Image 1 (cartoon, rainbow, N blue to C red):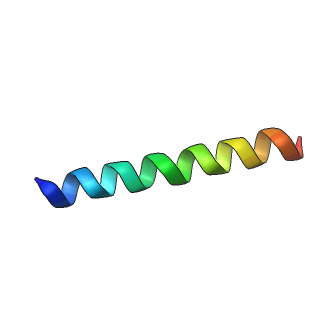
Image 2 (image 1 turned 90 degrees about the horizontal axis):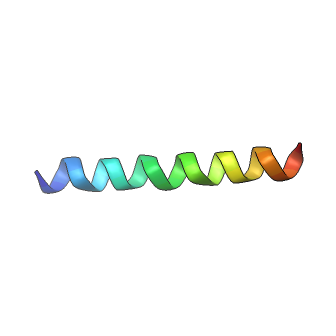
Length: 26
């Protein structure tokens, strides 16, 4: 369970970062 939690959190952070960068770039 811990591994899944870490993966989910990691993907969430990456997704948020990509969205923020895309928004700022646009």
